[in-house]
Image (cartoon, rainbow, N blue to C red):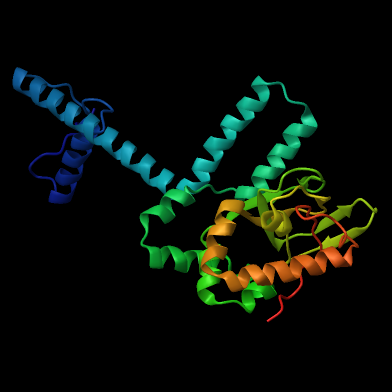
Length: 285
């Protein structure tokens, strides 16, 4: 057989290629090359080369894996979270229709990506936080007459306290007879207001409801049901009162709209403390 090892008479390209091939076969931990080491020095150098090569190979795999995972970490976080949800549903043996509704909720609520938004916003300065919130809620502000005609400082104060929520078709956002602890602003979707007199009123993008309970601290006299997938922003009663203490004119605007809504459904005779909801109206100047 012809010896495959290069000699000094071969070209430098052939010699270099052969040497590189032997080095890579050691370093990538595939083996010890074409020829076994002969002396003890060769044995120890080969073992050292294989150890260094295995270490470098492991580091390469680790960095490559981290790089791939970091390309879309929010989607990976969502997938990991939803796997836990699936295991939870399986553990509790939830019925199939409930599992499907939970799946659809996650798809509409997070849309395949999950962020720790509260932590991210908490790390930013107040001006940056306000700028992001105003940008995220730009469609809500543009569609809502209440915000369009209000002091920008009031709008910013209100938006920073809103909490994003998603409801599915058929969900009761508000139930009759319960104590009102939140009001809602509709970013996108359609809801139905169900009153005792079987009157049904539709609300859509740019409307708000549930504020009368926050003003009167009473119980709700109407139910609100989601007709479509609804993307809403909720405002808790404590935050509602905190903002309106700073802007008393806006409290009067809310009260004016609330009285108009009560009159529209014939509830003007209701005792104080009761509430309902109907379509959004532009506050009186």
